[in-house]
Image (cartoon, protein in one colour):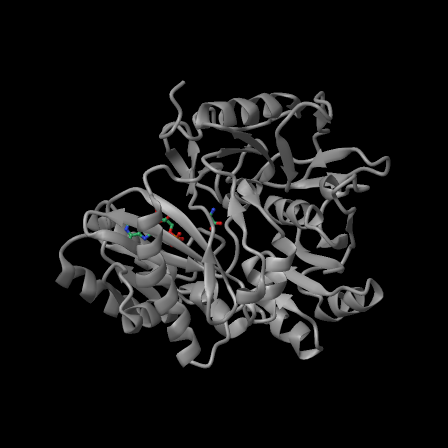
Length: 432
Ligand code: AMP
Ligand code: GLY
């Protein structure tokens, strides 16, 4: 393929996508809109240039114009908001080839009540749950249950819509918050569901509407504090693959969870071409879905893509065209391990410090990779902090100790005031 690719979004996930696509054979230029200054690359031998264009993800007309100006042949949409808003539909309607579901398929993430119904009808293992549309209904249900459930706002709530209640009082408070408007319209309906126990893994499938390929599973670290304590965040680090899942486990997830969901979508007339991200809890009775997302995970994407060998651009294009069977296979780098550590700005996940100068004392030979997220550029091209999660440092190794050493060494070469990172990412798989 000879391609100009446009990636929509501006975070670390999109930087890693742009990097992996730029390294795919046959790619001429990767554009990112709106992107960030840390992503820009002149290209090297074996890697196409990466350029950014100041067009917002919600500017459908501007994106269409950019696609035409730059002769874009494939659009890859990163975040959930433009997917849920129908950007993929808009671009497909104008003849573009798009990796990412339409607004119909994005409901899997944008409406937890809809997703729950679909999973239940498809016979997919998921926590038992109930939909409520008023405070009275919710309180009645709580009293009938007699134990605190997990309380989830129906709509997109920037990762803040879920309360894993430890007591009835916490569950009642979460219900009150939602019906008092804390999540706007996203909280007008709630799912109350049984609390599950077990390790949590993220499994990402690349789908072409009928068929799919699973990527190596990853484990994300959602809490801000060491030892998995403190407030929930978008993700402070990740590792992949997950050593306690083998090929047989993945085959089981493929046949019992992912393929039935894709089939259930198709029965509803939904041609799902994009990432199906299963957030799974490995319970005593087997893997159980706690959520689906309609996009790559962040930071799972930064962690998983460097493990892949093969032509990612050709595979995403084949998914977008509904022809995954014709795509070259992606393989994973044997038993290699990938480690990803996020550095945030001071204050994250609350209001953050901004505008601090970022310096990098590493060199081209430092090893590891840095994917930028919440950064802005000065007039002279220097990077400054401009958001919650600032960057992700990724290391690869033959084992997790090597991979984390590389990720943490590289992270140590990047400096800014207020740099905030966990030192224990991957504690489950590190020996030192
Ligand atoms: P979500 O926004 O759906 O990813 O939920 C946020 C977090 O809440 C998940 O990553 C889980 O750790 C937790 N969670 C969600 N649903 C459940 C459940 N049914 N049981 C236990 N924990 C859950
Ligand atoms: N890392 C969790 C997510 O992307 O939803």
